[in-house]
Length: 220
Image (cartoon, rainbow, N blue to C red):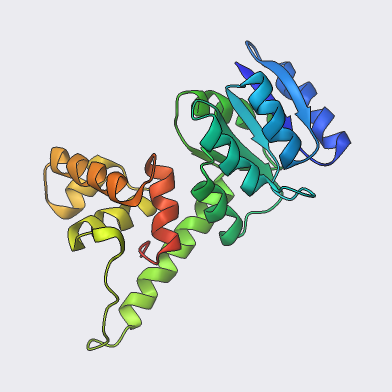
């Protein structure tokens, strides 16, 4: 596995390179001090995964993630940052990040995130998952407090009410089987809804679909 490390702090950048470089089967192919350098080095080395900081001078991690994912669809991005606020999380996932870790992550956490990213699977730090679930609960409460006669905004991108319901459950971290049980439908039906949701929203995976739900107020 080829990994590129991007962080504006040299001591952090080199420390991460040392940690990642000791993981079995992992090669660190470059170190970047900002998003622009990360994008250039990614184009040169075509790593399997970029371990990306968010707040960097010049081009930040959000824009660098979007650029890398656009230019190199086969390269995954895992965010590693001190920030776990709702905006940062949703923006990073919307830009195409596959995983999101805070800098409290252990060596094993980083290893699992890198391995999952190579398989195209999303990995969220427990603190990040908790923030998304908290946001989803807040959305549910806001919906409950909405006056019965209040007009509901039309759903975006041609989503049906059922698709919006499935998308909300995806944003809450539910699996297809859990969604099927909650909605009393077959799991194959849920899979069909999920595929339609991804197609309509332009999301590449469930993680991006969850970010879309939060961005459009559909997580609750």
